[in-house]
Image 1 (tube, rainbow, N blue to C red):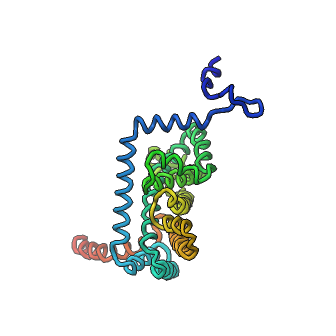
Image 2 (cartoon, rainbow, N blue to C red; image 1 turned 180 degrees about the vertical axis):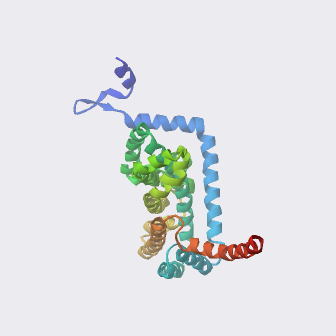
Image 3 (tube, one colour; image 1 turned 90 degrees about the vertical axis):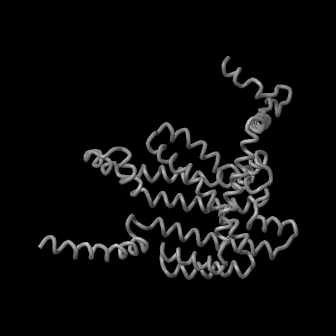
Length: 322
């Protein structure tokens, strides 16, 4: 009786499909979104404005210096994280984008990816950590992540347009939803793969659960977590291009314009600029994931900076000990 009461209104007995009453999923989803807009419309508009302002600020930072200067900054970062080969490849890729006059749209797309990735990781990594600790939460989260990953990407554009309108906020919201699942899944997987004997040893030495998480589990799980970060970035980049259909600017907007004009050249220029960005971001995050804690060129540079200070301290300490 309770089941029938719960399902009352979901079925339309007068509208049957091959003898089966129609299950009114679409109608109920529309009602839910109407309720959200009626009760949270003002808050959603304020949130959309905040997202737009944040992305615009990131664009202003990325597009502030001259394009060639920014390309060299990206190359320097690639050298610090990996090696000179990636730095040279980065310069070539960025100069290629500049030469096609796609620099500003590419920076708009990169700003969307940076913002969406940051939000997806801020939400996803803590959920992954908690899911690794609590099995019941993992069982609850898993089907939700399955839905988010298997739903066609274009479908997510419909509800965000309904809530935010045709603007960059809608594109960013859809990008966050589409890119979030790998961050949760691979964070949970990485922590679950940590050897239980290592965790037991930490408990034996009196470490608190928070200490074990920060100092043992997360460092050992970092390669898997970084693989999740890499996947989040790649999915965010692909969705940011699709988001051009709902008013998001950047390379996605260029692709949308090329479709409306049947401009094949513009479409390929925008697409190739996205490819160059994708290669740069993929190699960068892959290299960061392969680094062990305390290793890498940045750590060595910081170590060299500390050496003169430590030598001076030893020299000052010698007369005192004598």
